[in-house]
Image (cartoon, rainbow, N blue to C red; front, side, top):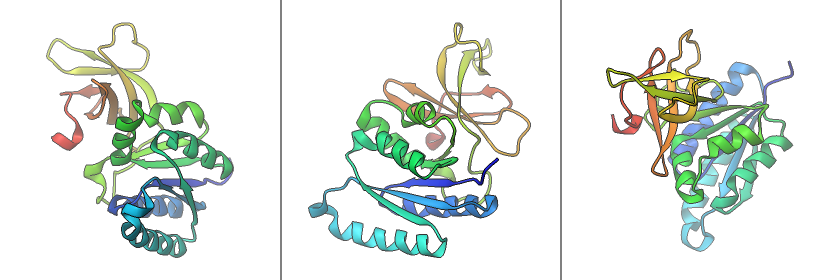
Length: 214
């Protein structure tokens, strides 16, 4: 297996700084190069000062972590194409995005970036950082997302499966927590054009409530 190559995808704002720090932590653990992709999708005339401050922070973080900083101007509807292109250009094996960004993109482009990236960059592992875990130092990232299904049980809970699409109540993407022998993690699904990320514990979803609303 070749060296791991980590790509962190960020936008402006404090969450971008946190994502970069998480990506740097993974890069250090895997002893692989770090690439930081910054989407410049904000109007220059309206956000000039904000962008200036954030970019200074991003450049400093890139320098401190020996990372390559890649800045791409893009409209929201082109973001998946930008990630795919950059991921292929740098031969990324790990892609990190934030739940905040995923939710924003889902609203703007009408579909989940998770599904697109799983199809367009199949050789890279995809990590999603949920908002409640943005400040935590452990147990924050997940294994590569895989298609999965939820089927409602008689007690009102939902059973996770990977091959029972016909009888499924919900279809989505399951992200398994690292360092666990059981199916514990996050299940991402779409309800009324909104992406929900619900907790899975030992193959069971106890309620369809977004992790941000618990």
